[in-house]
Image (tube, rainbow, N blue to C red; front, top):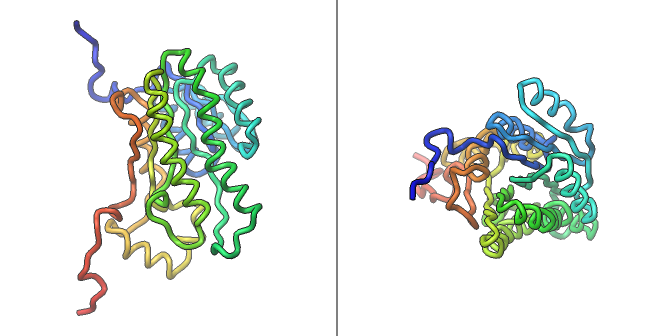
Length: 269
C-alpha cells in the first residue's frame, strides 16, 4: 500500500485546518496566532473581550489569512463550553485547539487568598479541562484532531511567589497525558510545551528587576530569557502532521536550564 507522505515544509502546513487559540490577545498568543495563520490555518482568536483581538484579526486578514474573533471569560465553565460551540458554528470545524490563555498573581504562599487561588485555577487549569472536554466530541466526530496546551517549566521547576500558578501548570502537563491516553483511539493527539520565563509584559515584574535580571542571565545556560517567537516552532510542530506519531508529550523550551549546572561558576578567580 502506497501512502502519500508530505515532505519538507509541507508536513508543517496547517492549510485547510481550523485552529481555535485562547488567550490570543496576549504577547505569546498574538505571535502564535500570526504564525499559525501564516502556516495556512483558519484561526479563531479568543480573549476575555473581543476588542482585544480585533486588531490582530484585521492584521491576519490583511496578510491574506482568515481570522474570526471571540470574546469570553474562561473563568466560567459555561463560557468555555459556549466558546467551543460558537467556534464550531463559525468555523465549521475545530481541527486544532491551542490552550494558551493564562493568568497569575505573584504572592508568597502565606499571602495567597482564596480568591487568588480560585481565579488562577479557574483560567489556568479548569478552563483547559472543560475546553478540551467540550471539543472532544467534535474532534471525535471529525475523525481526529489535535490539542496543544501551553504549560510552563514551573510544572517541574518552581520559584517563590508562584505556588498556585506552578500547581496549575503541573496539572496542565498531567492532564495532557490523561487526555492523550483516553482519546488516542478517537484520533486525537494531545501535547504541551513547557517554556521557561518568556520576556513579555506579563513577566516584566521578574525580568525588569535588576537583581532578578542578573540572576536569570547567570542561571540560564543560554544567558537570556526566551522570546515569544521561540515558542512558535514547537507549537506548529505539535499542531501539524509533522508530529503525527507524537502524543502525551511535553516539550521544554528553557535555554538549557534542565541540562544541568556549572559547578565552577561564581567561584571567583
